[in-house]
Amino acid sequence: MTEAFEPKITAFVCNWCTYAGADLTGTSRIKYQSNVRVLRLPCTGRIDFMLLAKAFARGSDGVIVSGCHPNDCHYTSGNYHARRRWMIYRNLMDFMGIDTRRVTFSWVSAAEGARWAELVNEVTTTVRALGPYTEYKELALTGVE
Amino acid sequence: MDLREKARQLLESGEVKAVIGYEKGTMGARRPVFVKKAERADRLVLDGDCAQNLATYLTRPEIRKLGRVAITAGPDALRAILQLMAERQIEEENLLALAGDGTVELASAQAIEEHLALAPKELPARDRELLERLGKMDRAERWAFWQKELSRCVKCYACRNSCPMCYCGHCTMDCNRPQWVPVASHALGNLEYHMVRAMHLAGRCVECGDCGRACPVGIPIHLLTFNCEESVHQQFGQRAGASSRLDYALSTFRPDDKESFIR
Image 1 (tube, rainbow over the protein chains, first blue to last red):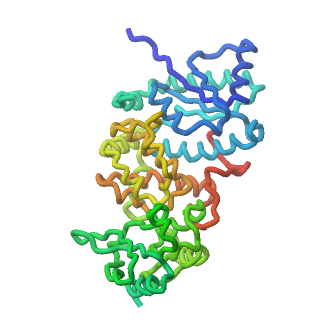
Image 2 (cartoon, one colour; image 1 turned 135 degrees about the horizontal axis):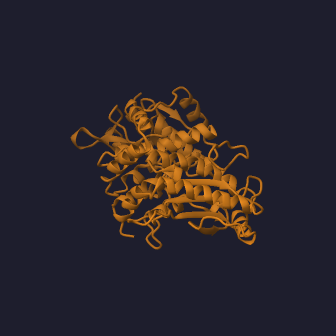
Image 3 (tube, each protein chain N blue to C red; image 1 turned 180 degrees about the vertical axis):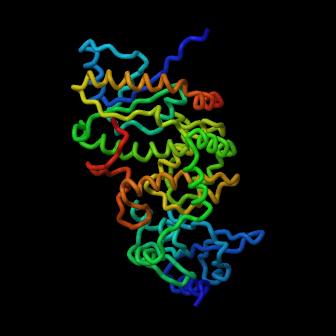
């Protein structure tokens, strides 16, 4: 009998909203799925598109990118710039055949602890149903990284 | 008056320091030539076989230090010139574009814009067909398609070198400490390289298709940048190379940008 599949989820979150929101989830004692690895960056605008590809190459089955709601950016417009980039990048990923169901973009504010838990649970359930991202893992195995 | 005579005149009068055009290469091919002396203007040719986008040379330091140059430019090269002006890479006063049969002088961005307005951009039929075919595939098939195509990539960087919009002195592809994109030509490195190339050109690609033409193994890589360009056009309503005063789509924003996937 093989072990049941547990997805690895990588979350790229902004320091000012989603990270604080995820912190609040913890201090509020809200329980949620433990499949997520949180990586904190200064701003959604600082999340390079290649980081998402790198996450998949290093064995993630799903990726979350989350930052401040529009108008709430600590740096005024980082999330607006990021949003434009994701609009283009998501189309390109789809065009190149990368499974966009495995990438979730969202806005979670510092006050939305419950929403963070909900988001992670939802994404984990979706990715668990999709199964491991073998296509990309096989690809990464050919690499020499 | 034909192109050769025009070039001779321009060089003799000192109006330009060089004329960038095409000459006969081997096996009937056309190759770029940089004519700096009036008596060498006879080498110039301009016909249907002259496909390369010569605008790619305008940002090279060797050309920039010459001063004012003339360049034979079809619609794609003209668009590239406008985009380079928008990105502050070339100056209006340093350039004379020779359009049409090589005798139509376009000395300013405005003249180029007006000239281009007469001929709207259309994708070649082959590219349109392939794009349609890809659009009908499901995701897994598209993945298989690109994996098969990209498996032939040898990372020669001809696509990068032929592109008029790739002008950075230091390219992240040549950077090996830290190494962001694997240099070796293997499946992962190839995917990441082409992903980076497409994203760095999103909103800037003028869709000349020279990267695809330059590819020695015939991978339709130009479709990747075309896809980004199409998204930019659909979502932000602008096309690269349309004007010399265009904001780079990905370094600006509108608070009311519409998307449907962010939760």
